[in-house]
Image: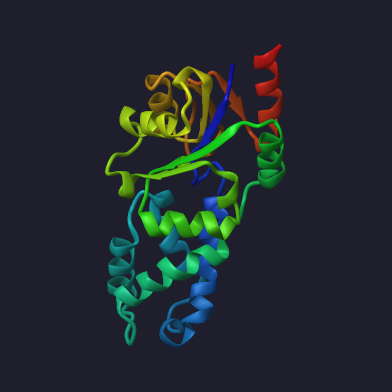
Length: 222
Ligand SMILES: [Mg+2]
């Protein structure tokens, strides 16, 4: 019987592609005094390319932007700090986020997040979405010193919740980190389909929207 539901953050709860686009547009406008020699669309497009869907950390991205665009009067460190402190104000949830979390809470599921990333940054993104209070456990790889798909981070989450892995479901978009990781840990895994990946063969179920989760859970009880 399913007792706990655990989620990935980026591209599962947080619409990261949209959030990044909104953030970088706002950053250009905010720092226009240093960036007005660069066409706005070039700055946005190049940032998104270099970011590689979040798999390249922004110290590298901003060093590259400063050098390519000849940015003067503001350092890559200052641009990075702007990203670290301002991204949270541009966090966009996927549709049905809060109604799905409300439903899960009403059904008394224990809830968790397991995310790969930097501690403060991911914590701010969770606050940016306004969803911290829904979760019984939040594990961030930098804080835990272990990352998905390693078994240990999944095991720690279920241990802290006091539930067995086989009574837990994990939902994520990354075929290896999320789906293979959760399956190896003994959980059921739901793939949230993502345009960045072709398929996640090992998944037990596939969803496009978060509000498909209740019917999957209800089918587990029948
Ligand atoms: Mg993800």
